[in-house]
Image (cartoon, rainbow, N blue to C red; front, side, top):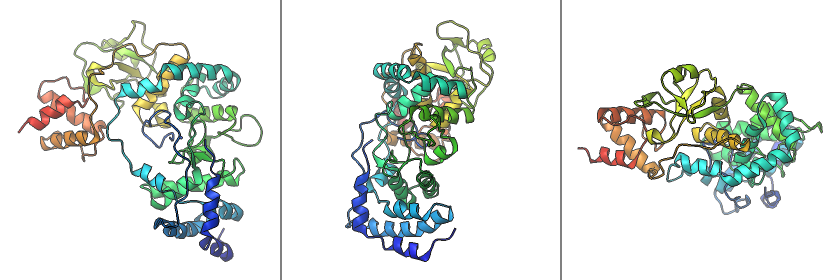
Length: 432
């Protein structure tokens, strides 16, 4: 479908005063699923998104972009009325750009994240929500094979059981990112999906609120994920992840099932590693059966039999001094929701405790000081200069950094766990 000339002219000259007034319709209801790496757990709701003032030099540029994007929306099959009434009223939000460009000063150690993810209060609230919505959660579990405690835990991490959806109008946030974000093509696709959701009458644009990055509802679906996986479980003709817990539970379970969840198989277990364990093998990329790990001396932390898992990996998120976990295919499925080990561990451990199981048994090395992003960048640079390649220094200790650090640790006779510490940084930077 091509855009009628009259509609294009209307949107290109849309009265700014009227558009600004409409931005106040956003309702207060916060961080996305797979688009962020382990976001802070349930932060206080940010201030309601507000439109920029006419003095903002970006406003005119945004208006011109919005008018031009009209053609793309109409060509994608969005109804002209929706394009005019929703896209035509989209607002430029400087705060979204600020959040998109911001980076935390310090990397968050796993114990700090997990202390919050599986706090006593979150466990208790999860058990209460599990009981309150047992019928909906059990129905989703039976239909898709994903345990109700896992669905409840994702709900708890993504929106604190519905207390913190986020306060940005999704169309405004995605339009801002599509105009001036780091990932414009991605944001434009999500914006078209958001318009299609409104176009299909699943929710009104002013009720479609979520995080600054466009994640929505109780379990923070991105619009494209909504279109692909959201389910009308209560039979009212709408896929409502904002107001219907049956729809929320079924939609979340459907996503996980389609992403590879194996019914009846656990996520993994905490384990005790044998003396002299080779920590270069503590990576998700190293996979073998649980029986083979057991033959090498890996034991469940409390002495019970290891769970039966194919393609299992060992993780030591805090290095040799911290707890270790044996994780299987369902853990990797949780990473499809949010590609951060801390997040997946948070879901797994919260679900385990909501279901009455134990928390982490081994102690975390809480005396280790977390490194800032600049310190990690300095560490990466120093390793590169000494021939232990970590890739381009970026302040993020990913697999390449761990591999380079392990090679350095091996060269100096240290345990090669790849965990960046202040002691290692000081040792590297002190060397000539």
